[in-house]
Image 1 (cartoon, rainbow, N blue to C red):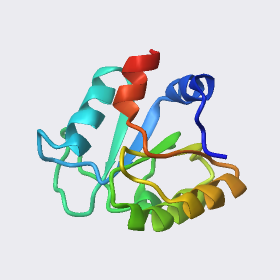
Image 2 (spheres, rainbow, N blue to C red):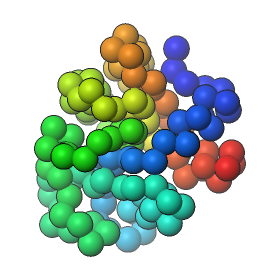
Image 3 (cartoon, helix red, strand yellow):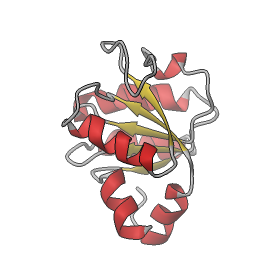
Length: 135
């Protein structure tokens, strides 16, 4: 069952390293402003975007598989139809604890697959909104 309780969400929000798949270099886009908010609140943001040259002064990774740092949370800013492949990439990593899809993004089958692999799954929720609400 996907994560839904405030207690579970607070525990997840205590994790500090977030790989943002689909992180945007464009100010004003949610995929830029939400990771920026999280950075400003002490989270380590690892941008994943094969089409951007620089985000937050860093060179983004092309894929989750390329990320060298340890990842706690994979935050997904990609269409729902891409979630399954992102979940597969997250499952392939031993470090990922949580897969989180932003508002409007959901894939129930991918959620079940992630949970069967021992990953927590939050879907159709905004990390910024939940952070502001709970912390």
